[in-house]
Length: 74
Image (cartoon, rainbow, N blue to C red):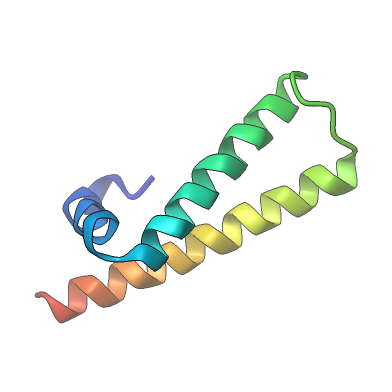
C-alpha cells in the first residue's frame, strides 16, 4: 500500500497521530478481511462487505493526507 510514497508514509506515521490511527485501523481491517476470506474468521457477507467498505474509506483518507503532505513539502 502506497509503495511509491513510503517516505511520506513513514514521516506521517512518525509525526501525525491521525494518520497513525488510520494506518493501524487499515491494518486491522485488512487482517480481518484476509482471515474472513480464507475461512479463519467466520463472518456473514453483510459484515464482510461493511468491513471492506470501511477499509477502502480509511485508505482513501490516508491517500488524501499523503497527497496533501506531498504538496505541502514539494
